[in-house]
Image 1 (cartoon, rainbow, N blue to C red):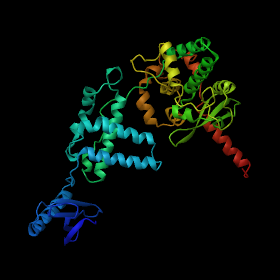
Image 2: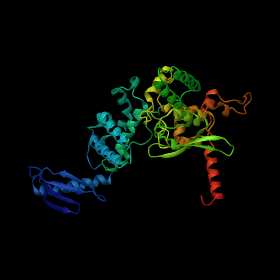
Image 3: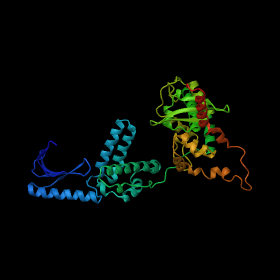
Length: 431
C-alpha cells in the first residue's frame, strides 16, 4: 500500500505503520486474519513507537479472542454493509447472473425502508427482535394501497434484509448465528383466483364488451385481450412467459387416442420449459393470429395493433375490463392483476383433481409452492373425492360449467408424447 510509512513487522501477520495521506504522526496497526486474506486496520492513537507496539499486540490478542469465541471482528453500520451488498448485486446484474430490475429493487428497498429502520445501527447489534418487529414498524411508518402495506411487499423486503445479514456473515462482520433463520413471520398472501361463478361472469361480460367497442381499433384490442385471458386461464403461463411467447413456440400434437392438444415452449427468467394445453387454446391463438399484423415464426404472439411487442400485456385495458365487470377486487378486497389468471388455472386444475406433482411440472414451480399457495382448495373444493364411497353421498356426474369452460389439460399428455418419441427413436436409430 503506497500510503504506508515506516512500516515495521512486529510478528508474522502484524505490522505497525504511519500513513502518508494524513497530517498527524500517529501509528496504525494492520492485523492479518488467520486462514484468510483479510486484514483489520486499527488506529493506535499515539505517536510514541513503544506505546504503539504495546497497543498493536493488544489489538492482535483481541482479534484472536474474537475469532476463538465467535465474536464479530469488524464494526460496521448496517447501511455500509447494505451498500456493499447492493454493489455486489449490481456486479451480478452486469454479469447476467440476475436481472437488472432485481438489483434496482434491492437498492430501492435498502434506501426507502431498511436504512430508515436499522441503517445507523452497528450490524453486529442487530438481533432477532429487530427482525421480528419489522412488519409492525413497516405498517406504522408507511402506507400502501388501501392504507396497508401488503404482506407480499413486507415479505419481499424482509428477504432482502435477511440476505444482507447473510452477506455480512460471509464477510465475518457478524457470526452465522446472527443470520435470521426460520420462516418469515408473515403468512403468505393469498392468490386471488376467480371463483367458477366469477370466471363465468367475466367470460360472458367480455364477449359483450367487445361488441360495445367504440371503434375498430378498440374492437381489435378487446378481441385480443379476451383471447389472451382465455389462453392464460387455460395454460397457467406466467405473464413474463406470455410476453416472450413467439409463434414458433406453438405446436399442435396428437396423442395415441387421436386427441389434439397444444404444446407451448415458454421462457421466463432464463428458464425454458414446455407446457401442454387443451385443443381450445389452439382456437384462441388462431383468433389472435387471424387479426395480427405480426404472424411470422419469430414474431411475438401478443403484440400491439401495429405488430410491435406489447410491453405491459394490456394491463391497463384488462384493469378496465375487470373494473367494468365488477371483478377488479376479490371477495377479500385485494386488487387483481394479470397473475390472477395463472392462479385461476391452478385452482381449477386442482379442483378437477389433477395430481399436484403433474401440475407443478406444468406450471414450472414446486409441489411445496402449490401446496403453500393453494392449500385452501382442499378439502371443500374436493368434497366429491373426499366423500366418495360414504353412505348418502352420490358421485358427481358432470363437472361445473365454469370448469368445463376452462377445459381439461390432460395430465398425461406430456408422458404420452415422451413415450411416443422414445418409441420412434427405437424404431429409427438414425433419428
